[in-house]
Amino acid sequence: MPAWWLTPGLRGTAYRGGVRRLTVPRFLAALVAVASLGACAHDPTGSASKWENPAAAGSALSPSAAAAPTSTAAPTAKAAPAGLKVIDYGPAPKGFPADPAVTSTAMLAEGVHPDQTVTLYDAVGGNPRALLAPTLSGVTVVVPIVAKQSGWVAVLLPSVNRTIGWLAPGGWAVVPMTGQVVVHVSTHQLSYYQSGTLQGTWTVAVGAAKTPTPLGRTFVLGRSHLSGSVYAGLDVLALGAVPDDPSAVATGLSGAHMGIHSWYQSSVFGKDISNGCVRIPKDAQQLLLAHLTAGNEVVVLP
Image (cartoon, rainbow, N blue to C red; front, side, top):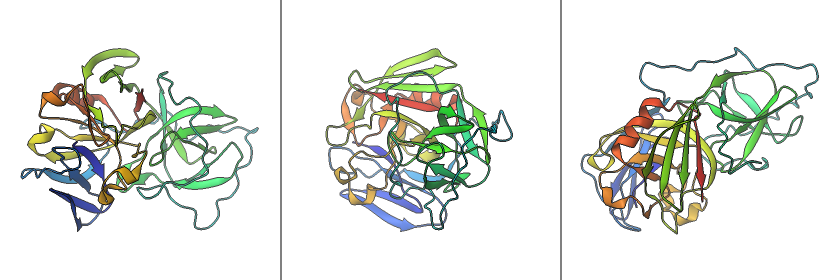
């Protein structure tokens, strides 16, 4: 079951039985092309390169505000203690609340881009739990806003599934978003919406029983330039979601992130066959790559 896996600071070269790790500078993707359950198939033309903001070429973040709105009634934010973890691709920080609307398909029309490292809290005026930086291993960070209260905003978090964190006013900009992807696992259908209007629906492949595609709301985190026939020569969209059961995947993939990518064989569509990623037809991936930007919402439903 081929899948797209991200591993910070490593390039994985696929070989049967696992992933060979090579230390390289900066943030590189680990490519694993799996031909059958539990076995990796070597792709002699495959390669991975640095991740970047997934906006279409030539586009950029378009903040709708230079900073967060402030409010005199906003609860005071507690100072972050020394040594608080910055969210990355390592183990996710604990203590954050669950997404209160994990199956909602109401489009999230705004995201947050930190213009400095900001503190994430477990509630409005609550306890600091982690830090969110403007970039994550070189990727521009945009996280969707799911709620607002007293000048604070709640956002979906990367590297921890179905979880939100709260940001106090200041230190971030609001970014408008118009794209949304909805995946129905049971029917193997992926639908893409732009500004609430359906642009297309395709039959796709999803995770196998042992490595299911994580359910709930997540978002587009980044994309990678790839070469390799199995991915139909197109980039991969990495998501904020991670495997629900890291022990179900190979040890070298324990820090993986889910992805959406095209696939060279149409025979896989309509099946539960991947390591958790969503495989889609080439024309669908081309459309997503052309229009989805960092922070755009992806909802995976049963």
